[in-house]
Image: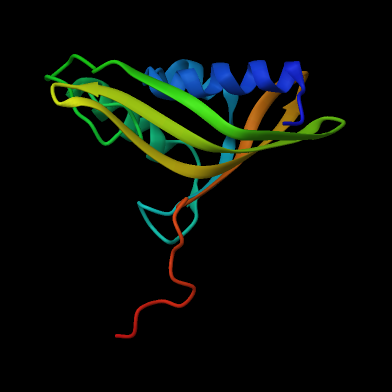
Length: 150
């Protein structure tokens, strides 16, 4: 792992805003012109914050954590933790790229369920504060190279 404490600490706080469905804190750590690819949602790029605002607010009301695939009782989130496997941080002045496999572990009545995917987050210092400007997620299993024939 390439280690940069400043970026690592920022990244962990940013991911905590997602895990906690904390929209206000998420906005403080994310650029308003965010772009992202989330392979399990749509094959197209998603632009801006409104998509996640709605998702995080709905997840919070339903007792869900984004990306965990597990629901709690209405209004009560199950215990969830995020771990970063194979974290690599590349820093170039006021720009950093963090790539890793995100492991989302959630306690359920049947035991702990873990889901995972690969992520890259581009982080830029804007007006003296770090913000995520781009996220790219991909499956961490071997997806077919070619799309299925229709």
